[in-house]
Amino acid sequence: MVENIIEMKSVSNLLGLKFFIPSYQRGYRWNDQQVEDLLNDINDFRPESVNNSDEGTWYCLQPLVVKKVKKADTYCDEATEEEDWYEVIDGQQRLTTIYLIIHYFNEMWNGKRKTPLPTISYATRKDSYDFLKNLEINEDQEAVTPGKEFKDYIDYFYMKQAYSTIHKWACKQGDTFDNNDFQSKFIHRTRVVWYETVDEDSIKVFTRLNIGKISLTNAELIKALFLNRSNFRVSDDKHLKLRQQEIASEWDNTEYTLQNDEFWLFLNEKGYSRPTRIDFIFDLICEQNKLGLNDEKYGMIGSDDYRTFRYFYEYFHSDQSSIEKCWNEVKAYFQTFKEWYEDLELYHYVGYLIVHGHTIHNLVAEWNASADKSYFMIGLKKKIAGEIKKCPPLDYQYKADGSDKGKCKPILLFHNIQTIVNQNKNNLDNVRYQIGIFHKFPFHLYKIESWDVEHINSNTTNEEDDVMTQKQWLLNVYLSADKEMQTKIHDFFEQVNEEQRNKLFHEIKNHFPQTDDWTPEEKNRIWNYTLLDSSTNRSYGNALFSGKRQVIIGKDKGIKISIPKMTKDGKLQFIREEKAGSSFVPLCTKQVFMKYYSPIMSNANYWTKNIDAEGYVNDIKECINKLDC
Image (cartoon, rainbow, N blue to C red):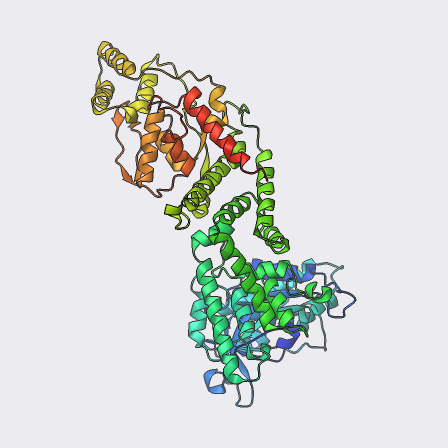
């Protein structure tokens, strides 16, 4: 079996090689900014010696994906049977720019000393080889190809433009520009990831890399290292193939599990953009240097997007390399994450800490250093207690405008977490119900949706002394009203006679006795706060408690219920019920609106201070007390 080749090549290693750009590739299209960015990056790069090594650090370009082809496959007049030609599957824009930079400095700065150029031939441009090597700067400081006529291709326009950009950039550098230093860094200290595919179909590889612009990931490059037979210390070919298949299967299983958002977003925040998620584990191994690269090698892997690949590349090219050690490190991380995910308490406590910024790096390090699970659990609880202590006390008076109510969010989230842990423990302790976990907090939904701290009892109290205020109050009570009262509210909005309208309003008003004895200050304490997603909060606005309760019940059933709205002309506008985007309601939010914390059943239309709120805050206190180790 012939395997793909993956290695690091400096620009100097590309000199003299022959490249063929197939017809399925689009032409050269780099603009001025892209060319200048590359030139500036090289010029600003400062190679550093690592532990007095002659090699030192280097600047890395993105991968160059190629495939060795025969003369007949190049459609190139310059090709011969004896020469090796490489079909460029991905990276031809960078490769062409590399050619143009070398060619420019050959012509303008080096005099008789010329750096050998790679050969580049485009299948759709038969004279492209001649065009590139004939480029020069004329008296008007523009790129031209004198002495020979070339067709007016758009590719050639961009090549000329790029060549002119290189010249203008070099001229702007002034007297302090060190040409020799720049060329040395570019040719000897700049590398590409060379990925040479052997058996794969070129067009399929190109399609995979370019449809949606999915570049080679660190994981894809690392996988080539893992499955390369030269990295196995096994002489028996049958055993080697079996081990390769085992690793490939375990790799796919790991990636499949990480692609499950419920598992993934337990460990990570939303917004991860890489197409493969196993990169996450490789990044952790790299950042913690779990494979034990020496300082010299570790110092040379750089800091760009392909840093992690180069870390594994250096490891597999070191004397200490062991594919079994390396793969066992990957499995150890994955198995740790699975154990956390599947354990009743670990899942909730680790998930809570990750939400609040604790890193996987540190948690894994503490897990590995712990004598057993109970010792690790004590550490988790102490960290959670530390997060709770950062919050204001439970009797803290938050600002009336609600600008600082988010400070209690860690407490409310913990209340949900600990409530679920308590319920599951109770179920497991009951002989009749020992069937595992009843409920898990869905961190993936909590992170995907926008959850915040909102009032249980409405924070606004308006005197209904004008028609518009009366209408607003009626909108807020609409969901709490029975059908008879809803009909009267509708009649109020249609009524034009002031006397009849006032009579209707007071009749409706008397139907909702005011038992609200809250002061404005008391409404801004944690006993009147709960977690709620922004869309649900917008849907019920300042509705009465019982109206909010209906919205929450509807959401739990997967139905989006909204209070009616008022049109510009003051009429009542009903909003049709529709399917909710999500039916997730945090457990404690649901229990608030079910009056779960109330020792006795109070008025269903209101969230009362002395019964409901007191019971709620006492339950929060009991959950926090569970953190005592």
